Image (cartoon, rainbow, N blue to C red; front, side, top):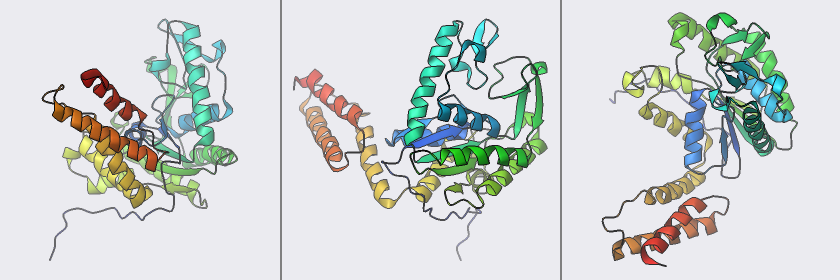
Length: 334
């Protein structure tokens, strides 16, 4: 009798298949970054959190609206605090002491995001918390408080109905675009401990319920159980980072494996393996950079890269090809 010391989360293979010709727009909490970074590593066409990390459903929805409408930010859209101009829709990387620089960076990002969203076939959306901060001066729910004192905000929890109604509107609107889009929702396993253990659990429950109600009658949307995988399969703290709150590398890699098994075909996974071998080859450090052995290695890897490009022209490994070419030129003049 085989004993299983885990409670595996059963996930069926999805009909929503991601491949190298299906751009993925990834937005939401920090767990979105982890999945987006994995897709980016394997050279999938992906855009990850162009406004920075977003935690609550309303802020994610607002960001998508801004991007979909290709909104141009003006001076009156920014706030000034601690000698910096900032946007409550963006994280601190967009803040600047010069208002024109801040506006230029924000509007460039919006335009680039708009073009990518327009052609995207998948949206990977992660909700982190149902708690929000509303800026008292403008009565606006913010994506980032920018270290402005807490007394300037009202802090409260969204109801399921508020989340569902907000998201019905944006999903229908995005589905009217040029590309037939698919939506993959998940809830971040990262606990928002500042809200307390009970409130964190209540918050996650609201998010899970809201997503399931939202996608109930949609053929174009699914729920991926990142949260449940961590809570049930990966209970041990070795799967977390040192703060015991955020996901550690082992946990992230495990959830990515589950994601890949669910949404990526065996055929595409085979291409991913070839791509990864080329990527790892660029990290090789030779004992003798001027030796014949390294020259043979570089020549062989360049040939493999060219074969991948010829066989899979939609996979972009130009960076790796140039690496091998440059190494050959610098070390051997060829």
